[in-house]
Length: 186
Length: 126
Image: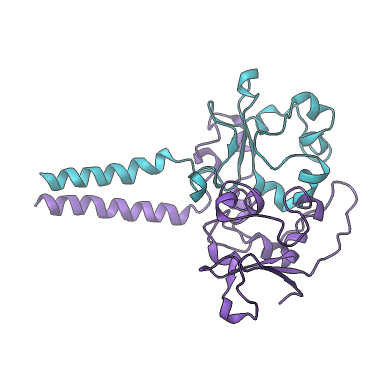
C-alpha cells in the first residue's frame, strides 16, 4: 500500500519536472537564479527564449547551433563596431592524430574564421606551428587552448564527437603519435 | 516504512536539487570583482545576446577584453570614457551607462565567473 502511495506521488512529480524542463528550454531571466527578480530592469531585458528559439536548434550550450545559424544567414554579427573588416577565409583543416583510442580530431579553420579574426587565437592561444601546441583534454578542460572558448561560450566539452570526428580507418594518415597533418579541406 | 522514506528522499531530490542549481543561460558572465564592494548589484553579461550582433573579435580583439572572467579591470570610469562596454554602451549604439539596472541586474552574493560552462557544472569541475 505504501509502495503504491509512493509511486502515485513520485510518478506525476517526475513527469511534471520533465514537462517543465522540455517547455522551458530557455529559462526566463527572473527564474534563472542569477537575475534579481526585484530588479525593475528584468521587464526590459530581452528573454533568451525570444531570441534563441528562432535560431538553428542544437542539443547543447545555448540550444542554438551558432555556426549553422550564421552560415544560413539567420544572424549576421558585425565584424567591427564601425566599418566592417574584410576577413580572408582560410580553408585549412588541421588533423590531430595523437588522440587514440578516440577518433582523430579535425580542426576546421572555416567556421572559426567566420566568427573571428586570426589574432584572437594566434599567437596568444595557439602558435601557428604544427606540433607546437601541447594541448590535451586535461588542459582543455582547464580552460586552455580550445577550452578558452569551448566549454565556456562555444559548444561545450561534453560534445566529444564534434571534434573527435574522423575514424583512423576512414582517412589515409598514419596514427603516428603526436603527428599533426595539414591538408586542404575535406 | 523504509520504502516511504526512500520515496520521500526521491521527492526531495526531484523538487529541491534543481532549485539549488543556477539555470543561467550558457556562457552568461558574472562580474562582481568590484560591483558589490562599491554598493551596486553584480553585472550579468549575456554572451548569447551579444554574439547575435557582433563577432567575437569585436570585443576580444578590438576592445581588448580578455577571454577570462575576472581578468578585466572594467570600471565605470573606463566605460564612461568609451573603453570596454562603453565602446557601444554610450547611448548611441546601445543604452548608455546611466541605465545602471540593465547591467547591474544580478542577485547579491554572486561570484565572478562564467556560468553554464566548464567552470560550473561541466566536466571541467575537476
